[in-house]
Length: 438
Image (cartoon, rainbow, N blue to C red; front, side):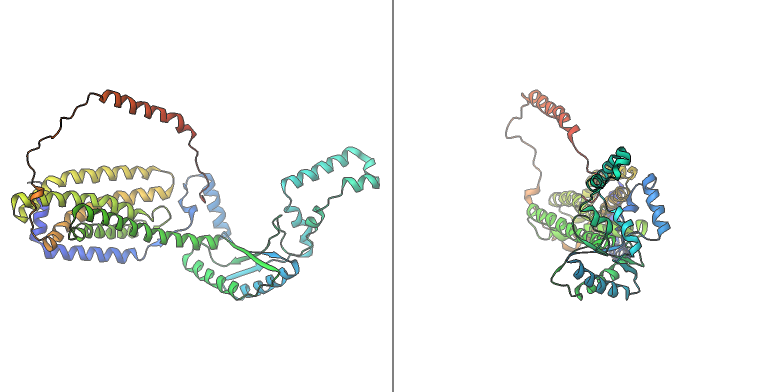
C-alpha cells in the first residue's frame, strides 16, 4: 500500500480532526501574514557583497537617513519667494520636519552658482581662461578683456540674483524639506506624506506660480508601497478568476469549482504564513507569487479529481475511488511538485535578494499547495460530490480512427533544428536593461 493511499484513507477516517487542523493552520497563517511588512527599499535587495552596495549602505548608516522632499515651483521669482515662505513656515511647524530651505545666505550665492554650471559651460570657461593666459600681458587690454571675459547669461547664473536655490535651465525653483524620519519607515513615511498633502492643499498659489512636481525618496516609497499592494491584489484576483473560468468550462460542473479551489486557497494562505515567519516582508518582486502558485497548484487538483471521477464511474464506491486515484495520481503529482520546487530553488543562487526570496517562496509554496490538495481535496469531495457517475468517463479499449504516420518526421525535425540554430543569430542582439526604474 503506497503512502498516498494510506494518507487519503487516514484523512477519510479522521475528517473532523483534519478539518480542525486545516482551519487552525489557515487562520494562524492569515494572522501571521497580517504582520508582513512591505519593503520599498531597493537598496536592501541589491547583492550585499557588492562594493557599491556596501558603500551606499555605509553612507546611509552614517547619515542616518537618505532622501529629502523636493517641492518644485515655476514662475515669477518674487511670487515664488512668497509661496516658498508660506510652505517653509507650514512644514517647519511639524515635529516630523527638521528644516525646510529655499533661500541662500548672500555669501553662498556665488559659490553655489558655480556648482550649477553644465559641462559645456565649464568647457567654455576653460577655453576663455586658456585664451587669456596665452595672451599674457595683452589680455589686460580693455578691448580684448571685454570680448574674452564677457560671460553673457553665465553672469546671472554665477551671481544667483534670485536669492533661491539655483536652478538648472528648466527654470524650476526648489524647496528642500528634510524630514526627521527615514523614507523607508512605512509608518513615518505614510504619516509624513499625508501631512505633505495637507500642506500643499492648504497653500494658496499665486496665479504667476505653478506647482511642477513633488519629488524625492518619500514620494517614491509611498508610491512603491501602493504599487506592491495593487500588484498583490490585482494579480491574485486576475489569476484566480482566469483559472476559475477555464476550469468551469472544462468540467462543465459548478460543484467542481469549490472542490478544486478550496485546496489552493488553503495552500496560498499557508504560504503567506510561511512568508511572514521566515522572510517577514514582501517587495516588488515577491508580491506576485500568489498568482503563480494558483496557476501551478490547480494542476495537482485537476489531475487527482479527474482520476477520482474516472475511478468512481468504474468502481462505484467513493472511498475506494479516492484511494485508487491518490495511489495512481499522487506519485506523478509529487514528482512534478518536487521538480518545480527544484527549478525555483535555482533562484536561491542569484545575487539579487529579490530573486532569492521569490525562489524560496515559490519552491515552498508549490509543495504546500500539493500538501493542501492531498489533505483537503478528499474533504471537499466528501462534502460536495454527489456520488454521480458519468459514463462518458469510462475508458474503452483504444482504437485509432486513423493511422498515424511519420513519413516526414525527419524533414520537420531538421526544420525545427534549423530554426533553433538560427535563433543564435539574434540572441547576441538582446539588450539588457540596467536601470531598475524602468
